[in-house]
Structure formats: structure tokens, C-alpha cells
Image (cartoon, rainbow, N blue to C red; front, top):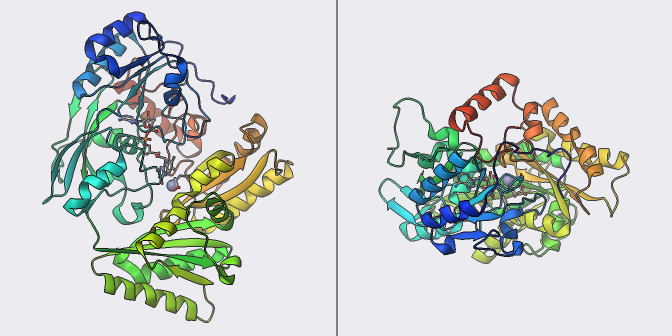
Length: 493
Ligand code: FAD
Ligand code: MLT
Ligand code: ZN
């Protein structure tokens, strides 16, 4: 169902027609063209997966999906679409959470999944160059025997693509340790909206030769061009990793806990992730990781997952155990208890609880997802205020809003406020927006910490960017894409 706020119509754009399909047949092999138009004439159900987003919240009406195998094919397609003024939606793994990767109307979908080769890896510098359609997890698997890791990890790793990650500037679970993609991406290959190929893949690690254009495409969500290749600095694989779930009696303890954990673990701290009790319960209820047991767990208001990644197992374990002892033996303990992983299976299970929250929410109902940056001290207040607000509107009931939960990347000041409802309805939407965005703005936060703007938040951009910034974003869009064909209706209204 399309919601009222998302009314963009790319009226100046043309629909794909049978002549276009005939032209694409000269560029691509037949198996790379999926279309409901003649002569391909597939049933719409064959391309439904490309028209609907991961949450099943945003629905496009595209007739045609093209799946090129080379950068030259992408360039030839884009050239044609530019001349014909056909809108293009670049699509990676279609795991985005803001409706950016599916069409608004019947734009052409350009799916990068067939561009899935590693181009090179240099074990000395750690520089990995890969096609944009490589799945994040397969890049991790590729790097493992070379003792390196991708400096990015997220729950969607099994489906999302490195080109999609770069295009959304995905944050994820390792940002605390390895920083954002604005730092680790060294170069990109991009097909610009007129079909020109811009190649910066051979950029060395240090390169101060004028404007750093690649930065514009990191987080551009496909509105400025199509990323076809990525050069990224892989990190040396840690020799030892460990994790622990800490159960906290009160949310107020999270902040002093973060300070203490950073102080004691310093260089081996690699993640500090937060989830409230309701998120935890949803995750284990839907089979994401094994439930934790014990009285102290029962009494916990929220949880923190701490991960260490270091060079020597004994050294790291000693640090982690000393941390735990000092936390438990303090006069006023910040935690009720801590469960340290004792085996690779338990390590995975602890991570599954945190990473599985997103999936468990989607099994529980329809998610209104607010991915916000606010001061850490306000995380609980914002979740509670949102729940109270929905309660005051009479919407907190099983056939409307079922849960209001908070989890996220505490270490990065990023809260995921999720409202889990029986359905997407205009009534719930109107109760949540602009309420949530005004709350975020009152804390001078960001309405999108890591998921992007997509279609969902075009109308909310102004809560986090002033008119001067938005005006210059528009000028950049106009400069790169004067014909307005690249992912129309996304990021900018
Ligand atoms: P898609 O969803 O296909 O596309 C996303 C956007 O990028 C769209 O606007 C699309 O047009 C554009 N795009 C895609 N590929 C290209 C390309 N090659 N060139 C130009 N534009 C392109 N995000 C986080 O930041 N942190 C998380 O921890 C996190 N965890 C997640 C966990 C789950 C279970 C799920 C479902 C999602 C999660 N996400 C997270 C959302 C995140 O944005 C995506 O998972 C990921 O970065 C998008 O990659 P994708 O290949 O699926 O892109
Ligand atoms: C996460 O941190 O789990 C992801 O960003 C996905 C989500 O927000 O649900
Ligand atoms: Zn996240």
C-alpha cells in the first residue's frame, strides 16, 4: 500500500516499451532481460520480488528488470535510458529499509546481482576491488583465507551487496571499530546518468588531487549514478574474537557502562550494541539465538552486547573477565550479570539475538522504522515518549500498534526506534509523523543515522538539513542528472 505522503509522480519520464526491449536485446543476453512486455512477456509475478521492498511496505510497478554482467553493458543501458528519458532504479540486494531500491512508478530496474566477481585483492595493502553486485558475506568468505575482513558487517550480509552498502553508506555492527565507508572506500567505478564511465578504482590510499568525487556517491542512494565497482580497504582479521551479553537493571546505566567498557577494553573493543527487553523477547520468541537464563536476566531492563577483537586470545579473555569482575563487584553494580560466550556456537547465538531483531520484528508485524541519531542519554526517553504518545492516541492495542522497541548501535549514538503494528495504516502513520521527527530535531539529531532517506524520508530531510544544504544537494543532483532519470523521487522530493 502506498502511503499518502509518498505521492511523487515522475511525470516527465517515459515508460519502457517494446521498442526499448528490442534495443536492450542488442546489449544484453536474453537471460539478462526480465520483462512483462513483449516479446519477453513474463507474468508480473516473475518480477514481483524486484518491485517490492524487504519490509513489503513499498511497491513499484516496473515492467522491466535488466541484469547486466559488465560495466559496459550498464553504460549502454544508461545511455539509451538517458536519450529516451526513462527512469532507472539501481537495485542491489533489495534489503534497504527506506524504500529507496524499488520504483515509485514503472521505472526500469537495473539489478546489479550478475556483476559479482572479485576483481583483485592485494594482501599487502589490504585493498580489495570488487564488482558492485558482490554479496557482502561472499566478500567476507573470499577474504577469510587471506586473513582479512570487510570493515563492514550487518544483519543483511547474506543478501545485501557491496554496491548497495556503499550507496546507502551502511553503518552496521563494526562502525565503532572500523569507521564509516567514507573512510574505508578508496575508489569507485560509477556509470554516470549520461552513460559515461567514471573510474577511480586505482586510487591509492593517499590521494589529495583535488575534489574527492567518490564521496558524493557514498550514500547517494543511486540518485547520482550507478556504482559498478568498489575499491575498499579490508582490515586484518583479528586473531581472537569474543563477546558477552550484559544484563542491565536500568537503562540509565548504559552510559556509564559504555565509559567503563571503553576504558577497560580500549583497543580490543569492537562492538557495543544495545537492545531493550522487548527487542530481546521478540528476537528469542522468533528463534533468533538461544534465550538467556537466570534471575538476573529476568530482572533486566535492557541489554548490551560487547564484542572484543584482538591479537591474543588469553590477553583478550583476561581483559574481558577482569572487566566483568570489576562490574559485578562494584559497590553499585551497573549490571545484573554477564554471559560470556564459551564456544563459537554461543558466540554466534549471542550475535544472533542482536542481529535477529530486525527479522523477528518483521515476523511479528509491520514495522515503522525510525533510524535516528540522538544523544545516548535520550535513547530510552524517546522510546518511552513514542509509546506514551501512541497510547494517548488509543493506538496501543493488538490490532493496531503491538510493540514499541529500541535497539541499536549505542557506541555510534544510533537508536533504532521501531513501532511494530498489525498493519501499515494512515492513522498510525499520522500519529508517528511528524511526532518522531520533531522529537529528533528537538535533540538536534539526525532523522537518518544509517539507512538513508530513500522514499520514506524525503519529506523529513529538512528536520536534519537546513535550506542551504538542501539547495546545494539539489544543485549537485541537477549537475549530475539534468534529465532526472536516476532513482527519481528518492532522497530529494
Ligand atoms: P538495496 O536495498 O538494493 O538498495 C539500497 C539503495 O541503494 C537504493 O536507493 C538503491 O537504488 C541504491 N543502490 C543499490 N545498489 C546500487 C548501486 N550499485 N549503485 C547505485 N545505487 C545503488 N543498514 C545499516 O546501515 N546498518 C545495519 O546494521 C543494517 N542492518 C540491516 C539488517 C537487515 C536484516 C536488513 C534487512 C537491512 C539492514 N540494513 C542495515 C539496511 C541497509 O541499508 C542495507 O541492508 C544495505 O546497505 C543495502 O544494500 P542492498 O544491496 O540490499 O541495497
Ligand atoms: C540493525 O541495526 O539491526 C539494522 O540497522 C536494521 C534495523 O534497523 O532493523
Ligand atoms: Zn542498524
